[in-house]
Image 1: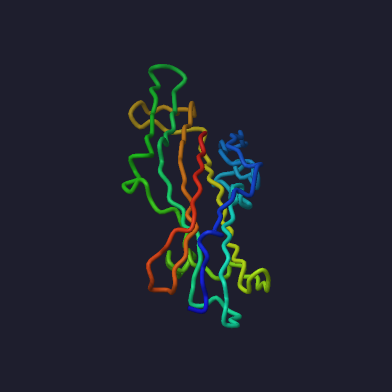
Image 2: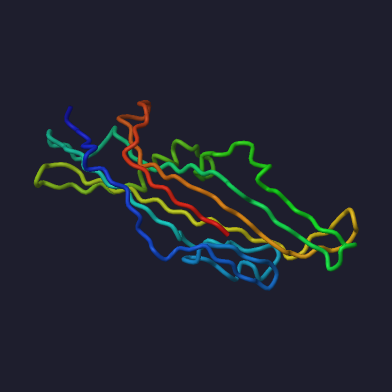
Length: 214
């Protein structure tokens, strides 16, 4: 085989240290975000704007592919990143000004029938496979020493967030309830993966876990 992936060189590393779970009181909505790359003005209007201007969480997968027959491409080998997630808690609490005005607790976790689940955002008109093994996200640098081959680099990023309205109409008491609490706890695992060709089984080269809680 001319192209040889050396799994002992595979690594997945955390590339950022500034992302952290934060809350912001916007003019019209509360904004929960991960600090780095957050658009806090998203909560200043209704409907809310886009919160994540860019990734707050970044990781990078690297591996060496030996090329011993003068190859200049890594085809048909493919590399990519896959993220799966599990929601542990996801709820909003609204309360009236008095006991008579009531309260509403929304357990959004019940709306996720698949938990844990795949957490990959596919492009419009594309599929998950194409998103995971997107060749435009990959860098393959040809090197000659100590062995001839390619240093492969695959980046991945994310920025979980929410915008939360300040009020909710309680249909039972017919009173406006006000935001009293928001809780979201979520775990993630990112897998650095490869396959020998587009129809071959997926192999895991490395993984990294992370967690966010508001």
